[in-house]
Amino acid sequence: MTPVNASQYIPQQPPVLMVDTFLECNDALIITNFKIPEEHIFVQNGHLTAAGLLENIAQTCATRIGWLNRDKPIKIGVIGSISNLEINAFPPAGETLTTRVDIVSEIFSATMVKAEIKCKEQILAQCDMKVFVTEQNVLRPSEN
Image (cartoon, rainbow, N blue to C red; front, side):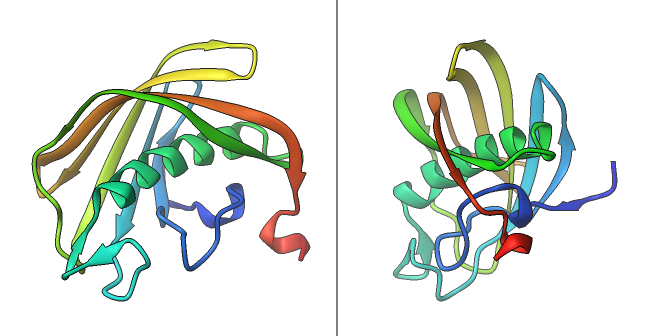
């Protein structure tokens, strides 16, 4: 798959946007990239924070939902739970993250995933996350 601009598929926009493109997306998997800007809201002391890593995973999940429902309004999602979180390193600004989210199960509006963030083949963080999709719609950026 050719990299696809992710911003049109999620409700988040700058300054909290945490995905640039996605490289693969289907019912079971999504892989995104994100180059960390130096002045990003989740960068402190030159490094992406734990909150930034988790938001990157959540927005990767949101990108998948937006892509699979691209002919419908964007839905807002919320993190329901995070478990088995391991953070091995906080990447510096300027680096590019590759985030892989594997879908474990989907029940009604809940999606359970296993996620992993890498930078230069080093695993930075991994966790299990539960994300809920609300019924609230937002306009797609192209509709504003």
